[in-house]
Length: 98
Image (cartoon, rainbow, N blue to C red; front, side, top):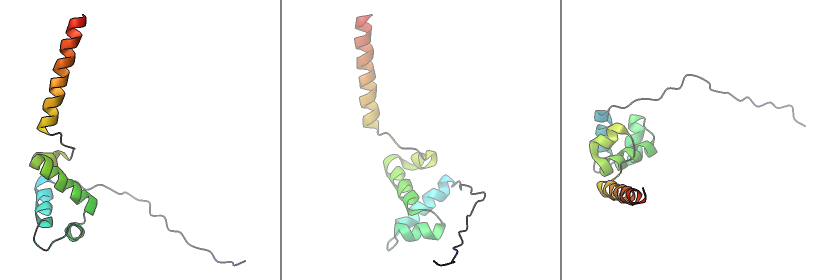
């Protein structure tokens, strides 16, 4: 048996999330679309995880700058219309039963 010990360093500290302004997000997204640019290199240059940059790009394409600002998934207008129609139909059916 060996008397070797391995040192394990635990990094415990105050890790804070950064808050990106909408303008900054849009600037980073725009740079990621530049000719010859990759998402990974743009993300690395700005200290953003590539998957987060992909998420911002998707939000922008689905819902515009408002979606990027809210950082929440966007429901398309067609989906909203379909759900509103369904609610009206269920309310009509419920009205018949009372």
